[in-house]
Image (cartoon, rainbow, N blue to C red; front, side, top):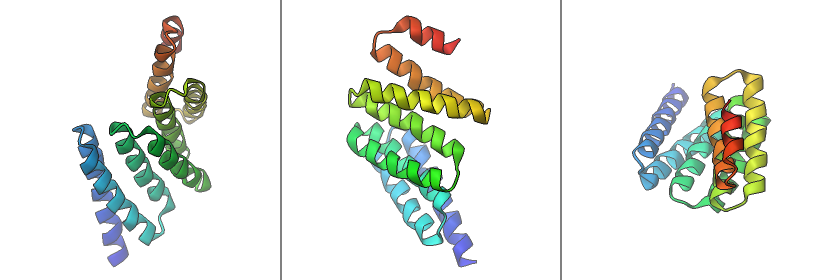
Amino acid sequence: RELTDRKGEAAALLTAALVHRGRGAADESLHAAREALKLFKDAGDRKMESAALFAIADAKCLAQDYKEAVATAQEALALARGVSYRRGEALLLALISSARLGLGELDDAMASAREAMTLCATLGDAGCEDAAMDALVSVHAARKAFDQAVDAIR
């Protein structure tokens, strides 16, 4: 029962992190996501560990700490792949693309966005595809390749 309560608390903290992120409150999002991560680790839930690490990386992107965002997202990606969490993997690739874009690493950002698009297409997940498409279009726009951005949307 205690383990279930801890996982419930962790899930609530992860939700709080996402709400704070949506409000643009990077510090609060980061704090809640870190607390969730501790609880998911204690519970041995590796899939949710990757989700908490995603939230940490996302908060770091919001704070424009792109280098740390990439490192954290890559850690989460390894976890997601280790437990065959394909949707998490795809969303992390899109996040890595965004962080690499923030670092000015356009080729790496494009590679991650394309990998995310391919994976999302195999999953048939519209929300996942939206995130990957956003990453892909953002890289095309950063390259001033507006025709390619429009073509990617079609």
